[in-house]
Image (cartoon, rainbow, N blue to C red):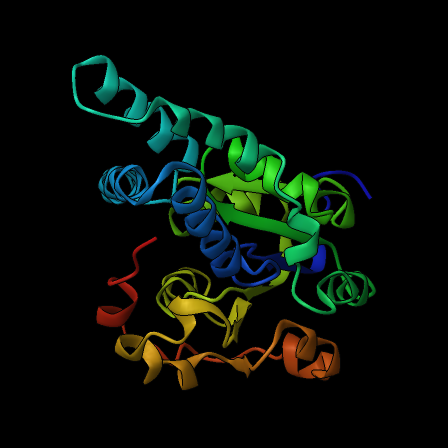
Length: 245
């Protein structure tokens, strides 16, 4: 099949807290920072991290580290040993944080159509995470990483054209936004994993996803006809417009 051939179905799979337990990775990083560099330096890093995420709309761990260094160069007190954190991030054993059966899910879905990683993130750390976790190879290199993927639906369709899409993501509002674009050509799947999926502020919307599962591995047991069925948009326009990355 050529790159631009139209598939019957394409599966769009998120990474963080969908296939990969990113909450646990962040927990490990927090513990490492405090243990190796002290609570004060760790707190300063996380303040910069949150500031940068607010600006960019996605988590940029290495970018926060660069800003941390820039602050130190401009006279702001900082523990320069924290720069060693970059090696901890780059060398982290991401494959150990895959959710149970995550790779089996990809192999299972590949029976029906191409699987594509569709992720938000930076251009250095996020690809590294996807590669070292084994997800890059699992999807045959079909990896898309955007700043705001819900704004890139046209690009996704151009690169991976399909009659129908199945999107698996832990962010219910993001699913709503893409459903607003693709309508009944999209089946939304919400795994109830991670802090976004379990956020009380959006918990009431979970039932509006076309398919809700407790764990990503449960997707293997969902009937293929259920995934491919065309459904009207259960979210209204106002809710879809609230999506944030």
